[in-house]
Image (tube, rainbow, N blue to C red; front, top):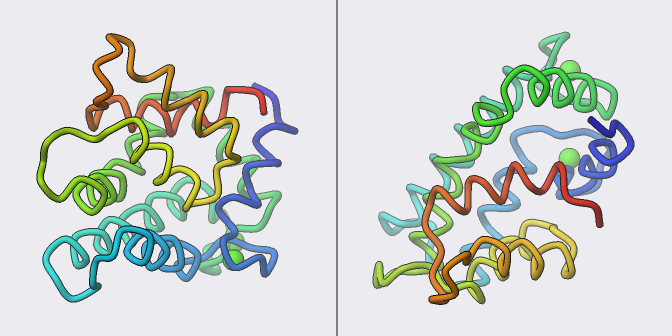
Length: 165
Ligand code: CA
Ligand code: CA
């Protein structure tokens, strides 16, 4: 596992750029997604996304907040992410599933199937670089029908840590 690559992902999680990851960063991401797709926080989809953001934060804290101060430092993030990715990459990505499911519901309100373009928008809004987002979205649509499943989006989250920029 490339620790430098994982360290570079820290900035993506530190959405407000204050030098550590905490609950607020996940709420910032949820708010940005709602704004991107024109959804209110009060509707069911908005509430589900915020619940997913909370679960994502709790999962991240469980993996990486070693000293329990409700902040994940860069050092805690690298150590925690590397350890968990080594132990179980699939379970690592599962911490993001409720949030990603919420994001999909916001980006695909009709439930028609998430388009590759919408998947790319989700990733870019939460801080994935444009080229990585485009590459990941295209790679996920293996059969080329332009639609991406929830499992494939969760897989993209894992890829985010392993695909070079
Ligand atoms: Ca932060
Ligand atoms: Ca901490």
